[in-house]
Image 1 (cartoon, rainbow, N blue to C red):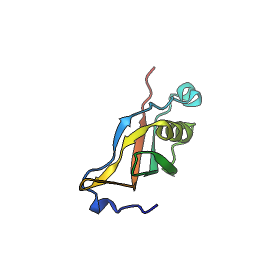
Image 2 (spheres, rainbow, N blue to C red):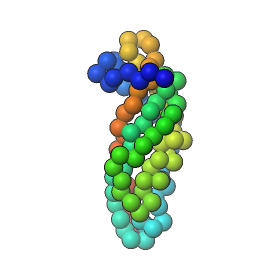
Image 3 (spheres, rainbow, N blue to C red):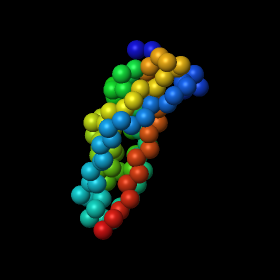
Image 4 (cartoon, rainbow, N blue to C red):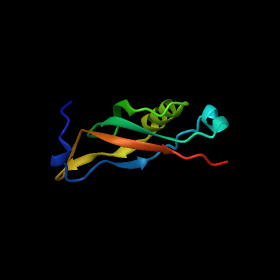
Amino acid sequence: IVYIPLMEVTKMPALKTPVEPTYPEQAKRLEKEGTVILEVSISEGGKVLDLVVVQRAGFGFDEAAAVAVKRSHFEPAYVGDRPVAVIVLIPIRFRFKD
């Protein structure tokens, strides 16, 4: 797969069917919040091919964010009218609500 540099992309990928991450039980008990940043490889068909956690938050947030993004579906990125594969950073913010 050839990933297109984001500076060449004319339309960024967009969430088509987002999956909300599950708030980890350990984090709930401790009333923790955090932000996880994922580096996500998205195919020209909008499928998540791979992801890497580039900023961890601990307390189960990293795993919950990864599972949610892997289950989500995206509109692909485009260069003109051609769908392309890209690698993007996606932040997932967990906010404690009691």
